[in-house]
Amino acid sequence: MKKHFWAILSSFLLVGGNLLAQSQENAVEEFFRTESKFYVVVAVLAIVMIGLLGYLIYLDRKTKKLEKQIFGEKNLFFQEDKK
Image 1 (cartoon, rainbow, N blue to C red):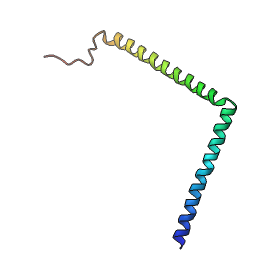
Image 2 (tube, rainbow, N blue to C red):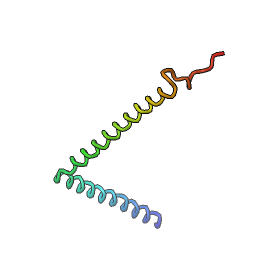
Image 3 (cartoon, one colour):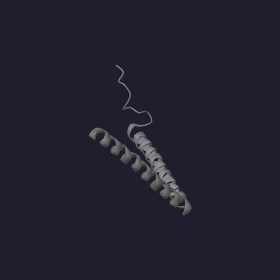
Image 4 (tube, one colour):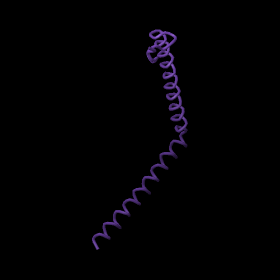
């Protein structure tokens, strides 16, 4: 009987917790949409991602330039020795 009691109690807690979490998520989504803050968050994230992508492209170009200065046009570092 104790096993069944704990199983039923835990299932009620899990289901109740999920229902409570869903209602809180809906409230948060509703708040962002009504206040138009959702679009501000999306815009800020988009700007950050574009900035990171631009920085990675900048670093890639800079690295290629340094490799050409160090190894020349032909990358001698990765060529095999011919005997």
